[in-house]
Image (tube, rainbow, N blue to C red; front, side, top):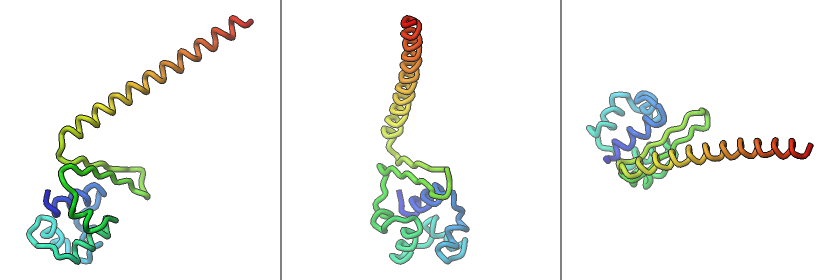
Length: 127
């Protein structure tokens, strides 16, 4: 994944338009769009600006790869976003764990019902 693709992905995960990002960088929308498409090369200072906007270091921006997992939680919103890199095995494992968690929640709910039934039975036997 190219850095420009990473920048676009991180912008989209935040639900920011190209116009918002251009404003944050102090540049035109057309100029930012070219930058995001890779038609204009980014210099080190621009990398620094972008990293600062996303709240990460330049090294983190440059090192995001296909195995990266990015979780974004907004302080001003109840929305959050997750991006899972190109590894299908990660996606499969996440789905497996979600199913496992749902099953555990079902078992817990069933056990709570059984405990309540047994509690009522004990109360009746004590009378």
